[in-house]
Length: 311
Image (cartoon, rainbow, N blue to C red; front, side):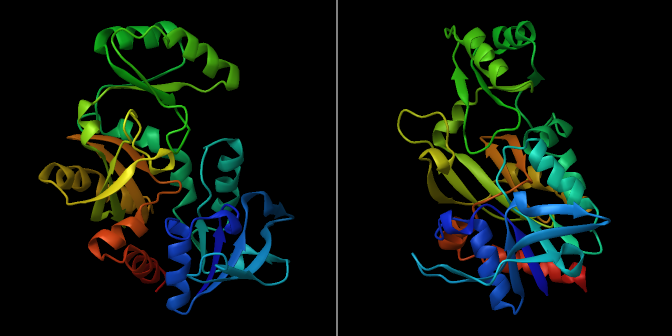
C-alpha cells in the first residue's frame, strides 16, 4: 500500500521510543511505501487535498534513521492510508488538519478517523464514561473551579487540550494557588480547564493500556519520578512491565466497542488505580516499551487491522 505519514519532523524523533517510527518500520517490513510530510504542508487546492513532502525510508540506526527523496507535491487521495500522527496541543491548527483529511476519508483510510479524533480528544471522550472516571470538572469560571476544589480538597488541574504532562498541577487541600493558576491559563488562551480529584494511587504508577481496533493488547506502567506527581515519560516517568487487572479489562470492554465503531484503530488509555483518566486518540504512544517488556508487536497488530479494512 501507499502510506502517508502526517507527523512531526522526522529528524527530531527518538527512534527508541517514537510510536510513529515503529509503525513506519513495520509498514516497510510489510512491503508498504512511505511518504512523509509535516502538518503545515497539507493544503486544500481547488477541490483536492495535497501534501508537500518526501518519499521516506526508515532505518533502525541512531544518527542515520531516515532518508528522504526529492521534495514533491502529492494528492493524498492517491494514497491507501494516511496517518494522523502529529503531537497535540489540540489547537485550531490541529483541528483544521482533521477537516482537510475528512475530505479524503474513508476512500483513503485515515488513521485514526479524523472526524472522531476531532470530536473525541483525549480529555473529553472520558466524559462519556463517568462511572469509570474519578470526579471530573471541565470549566473556565474560577468560582466553579473553586467549588470543585472545596468539595474534593486534593485535585489535579490541567489544560483541556494539552499533552505530555505540560501544565499539569496538583493542588492539595492547603494549596492557595488556584486563582493564580487560573489567571496564568486565562492569559494564555480562552479554553476551559479540566480538574479531577487527585488519585493517591498514582504513586504506584499511571498505567498506559494500548487498544488496537477496540481490543486491549497490553499495558505499561509509568511511575512518577521522585518528587513528581506527573508520570508522563516526557517528564521523567519510568516505564515498567505490568499486566492487565480485572478492572482494566472491565474498562477496556466498556470503551472498546465505541472506539472500534468510530475508527479509532490505535488508542492509548490512562488508568490510575481503578479509574480511567484519559483516552488518547490523537497521537498515542507506548508501543515500543510494550514490545520490549512483553514481546507484543503492536505495530504488526495495527497493520493487520488496517489491512483488513483495506481488503
